[in-house]
Image (cartoon, rainbow, N blue to C red; front, side, top):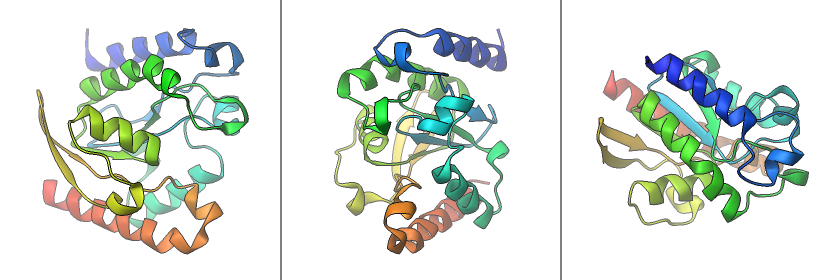
Length: 195
């Protein structure tokens, strides 16, 4: 079975998942979207209202900011892969609970194994913590590590992890927009180095 077929099967499994209570509350599960052959994987925390409605990641206001940041470094959404750790929306957009992350994270692990990105961008502190711990790094506050590059070894080669603020931060703290843009410039530089 090819990679694309395996990823499609995984997405179907996610859409039917009932491993935690969020499965009973959702309108749509949100497996992820974008290129299965992307060098870059963005990992958010959990779907919000619009994501739950449409079954796609980052389609609300934070998604518009993500699109703008991608455009700023010459990338389109279709060229990257975007997903979340938790695939169903927590009520009232609250942070995902530890047991929800535990129940859902095996899906993300499989997506990473199948897509084999060169760069993983955790968006926000929950995804940053999960990804850094998964690859054996100590976790510091996101304000200290955003835009920094961590180098990890995997069975399929070297992988770079660059935590970033969640795009929604720009909506609540517009003064951080420049920092977010700077982090995207660092991502562009890393991409150019890997090309």
